[in-house]
Amino acid sequence: MRALFLIDGEHYPPVVLDAMQSVRDSLGVEGVAAAFLGGTEKLKEGTDYGLPLVTGEDPASAVQKSLSEYAVDVVVDLSDEPVVGYRERMRIASLALAAGTRYLGSDFELRPPEFREVSTKPALAVVGTGKRVGKTAVCGYLARLLAREGFDPGVVSMGRGGPPRPEVIEGHRLEVGSEYLLEALGRGSHAASDYYETAALSRVTTVGCRRCGGGLAGEPFVSNVVEGAEIANTLDTGVTVFDGSGAAIPPVRVERRVLVAGAHQDPEYVTGFLGAYRLYVSDLLVLTMSEEPMASERKVASIVEGVREIKPELAVIPAVFRPRPVGEVGGLRVAYVSTAPPTVLDKLARHLEERYGCEVVAASGNLSDRTRLRADLDAMGEAEAYLTEIKAAAVEVVTRRGAEEGKPVFYCDNDPVGEGLDEELLRVTREAVAAARGPG
Image 1 (spheres, rainbow, N blue to C red):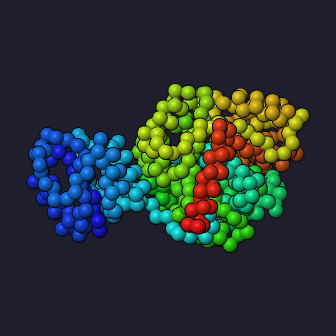
Image 2 (cartoon, helix red, strand yellow):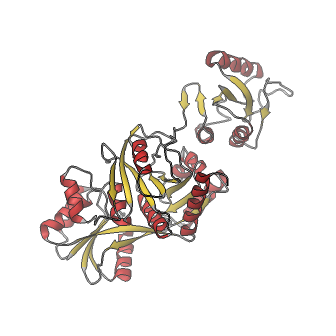
Image 3 (tube, rainbow, N blue to C red):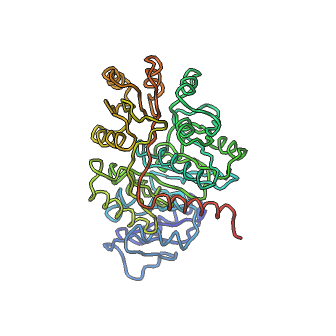
């Protein structure tokens, strides 16, 4: 294995030289370069470390430069604080993993996620920095956009509640409505899983998959996504879109990735920790929830600035979500059920009334809390219909309640709205298609 050593000037050079030799002997690696991360206390001018020495303005830039100049299999960290601390090491880890190398220290090892070469079609992935950032809504919107533009997309969804064997739903052929979802629930399926949601709301073919666990860099501990990707290869579709799950990344190689982060998140989850890794391996960032009261203009600007410090060339689209009923709700008194926080429910209800002509007589953001949701529904007797996202308890509680009461249940999507969003989504798709075709 070809090794890049990380060293600093806070260790005596003879100690560093002996340590590098010890690592060579114990791991059987070949040192190809050393990245000097900083520190001068014990540095002696003219010290020869026996390897090409790479420097930078800071530790991350020294590592980034080294990885761009040398092909390595493992990054061996022989440095320590005060030159590098927890934050600096997470940035170094992100760089190493994005370059496809292991990052090894005295008591830790991080491996890059394994992305399997399985898709035979141009492929994109929509991934997130966590749950409730709107990743699946962005994926569904992308699928609808690509369908309108003639790309014939199919979506492979990965979820915590997916089926034991990948399951295909031909959303363009089926009326995936309340009866269909209740039947799926009766069969024991998680009928609010992402692949049901995307099939019902975007009317495209979806392949439902499952995963359990997620590593720091997003690799699922267990999943059947590779099997789902093989099924997607056989479908009558032109482009495959892989939908991630939370902060977990589908374990398949794709030509391009769209990253979805929330401006309401702690910024370190976007630009710090291994959020930086997700930025490095992505080609577009959609920054959702970019409005008050979810996030101030200053916070949005700060996150965008932080992203540009990590990956200046990455396009960033601040966006907001607006509900879009799938069905005609004009003139109806509706109860709107969502996962949205209470602080934005009134804004979303006003949008529904102004844009779609319904009257929102009650609203609940407790779709992911069954006990509170049932209590909310008990107080919504004046509603003529339910309007709900397909999330969490949407089928089990809301759709079943509507069937019992004889009230129609309309499903609701959340459309991302951001300046230049469509153009950027189409750009990465065209790049993915071109990359899959190869030169010429």
